[in-house]
Length: 180
Image (cartoon, rainbow, N blue to C red; front, side, top):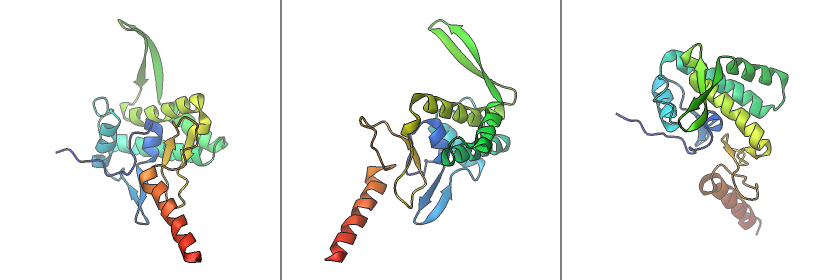
């Protein structure tokens, strides 16, 4: 039986999607990664379920990577946060390959259980190289989700216009009508 993904925001780059395994619902913090079933949902949502197993060791290492990413997003450049990401990255490496399609890369792990967390940490490095200023937290004060702003002009503020953007508009409208 396949369990559906309960998160309000999916489809972000794998590093931010790992952060988004925690979210707020009706003022209560939710966490997809409380067990291996939740890990299986997250692996499946990111196309990692064919390569990695949703077991207790993988869950523990993935949570370590999530905490390291969270520290780095909350405190960019903080030496402790950087060291924690480097520690996660130390569990894997890239081997250059040549395939029929051309040059490629193959990730390798001494402990395969580090694969999903390492993949998310490496993806974050890609986002930092691509456009670090486009890594964002939702502007809604009650939201803890993150996104990579792919809008043309780079002014996206909300994880979802339909959810948080609409809440903010409704709040402003209520405040204006209350003043009158």
